[in-house]
Length: 120
Image 1 (tube, one colour):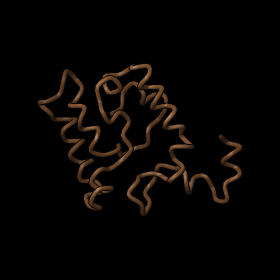
Image 2: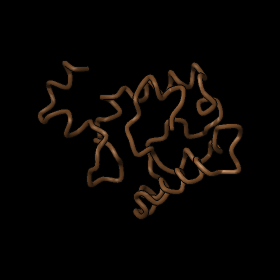
Image 3: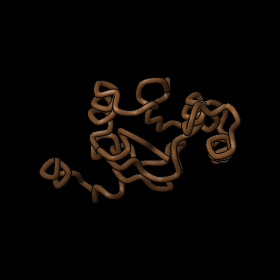
Image 4: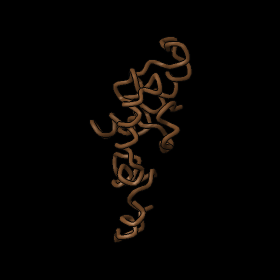
């Protein structure tokens, strides 16, 4: 991966980091490649090492639904997701209703392999 990134025409940090940018996404367009996102996500699904990987339809979500669908609310659903995750009476044990993972990506970048098993 490092060898390939050294061949980019711009610094990999510009196009492959989890950062603010003018698109609907919270990461550069090559972030999934740089982080091996799809490989790690599929590994987590195969291992079923967390309640999220077993039950969430949006395990390790990286899309902001409101921003992609209608272009508003860049952080609206993230706020709602955070609130529900912390204060929900709908939580099962210590794990909030898994559907809320679909609302928005996390504010911080996923750290693999740690986040395969639990993401806050």
